[in-house]
Length: 253
Ligand code: 2YP
Image (tube, rainbow, N blue to C red):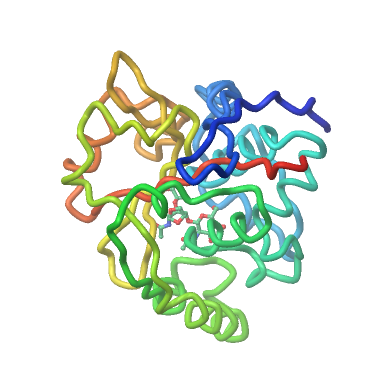
């Protein structure tokens, strides 16, 4: 399956680097998923780790992955593998980018994501990841594999200690912020011990308020939040704020 490369609006960052306005394609493609049913753990059903494409049944992360894979143009499957696996290499369950912080870092390193929060928010936090290795019973591919737990634990240690930029929810008004644009990927930070991100979605402004286009586990489908994003954050005690990343086409694309 291949999708025509979408024209991407370019604008100048203050330092003169050329990066796209958050591409309209992320929002347009994301909205084509409205109503798609929410199904958890679609990537964990096979014995062997393979590239799973199930655009008819998404969770919060796979919804963003399929949207990004299509918005990047050219080969959907090739893009998806680059997005979902460390350095694009499928090598068993631990090679999947399970923590969104590493998913983001991989996208930046491979030139298809840029960290907007790193440019526009001075708040930083130190990553401390251990959730999967300390809750193996929650993960089908960990519950009965000491080897996978050990490998996941190594990756947790490799990412832990890194500093990332974020925005505390107290600094996000219902109207959003000028540097958060339609189509941006929103990663919601959590205070749950050992976890970095608790939910992801796509930014959409409606009537001057910043909402979230996301696969909702409570509503069981992809929706645009009826409440603005800052209300969602304030209604959830363990949600602390957001990281904002943007699809990026390097200049020589
Ligand atoms: C990820 O969870 C899983 C991946 O293993 C999985 O749970 C973790 C740390 N990683 O491959 C991937 C796709 O299924 O999901 C996501 C989960 O959000 C769910 C999917 C949702 O809200 O619908 C990502 O990590 C994005 O936010 C967190 C959240 N996991 C937890 O809250 C434990």
